[in-house]
Image (cartoon, helix red, strand yellow):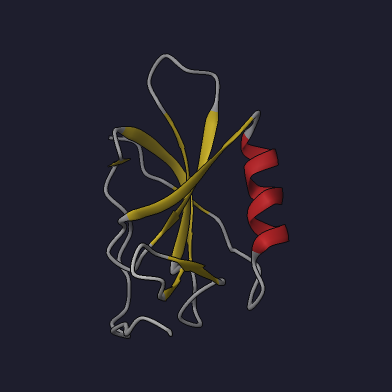
Length: 104
């Protein structure tokens, strides 16, 4: 079963997701890069991905997000380049086009 979603345009993410600073992000132009399962066993679109870092850490994280920027899954990566490559490998409907997050 596929979870229902709204198709309103997404806005840029907040400066932090799950306490980690957003370094760059990509928003799907087609409703989702791919689908992941949730606790209700629905297939939920990954509408956006973000590469983030926690203050004081060298590790970067690839966050897979809903259209409301809720983090559904994450993966730790050694570098921003690794996170970008992983996101591109996992995307099935389109290649992420990265946007550098504004510093605040």
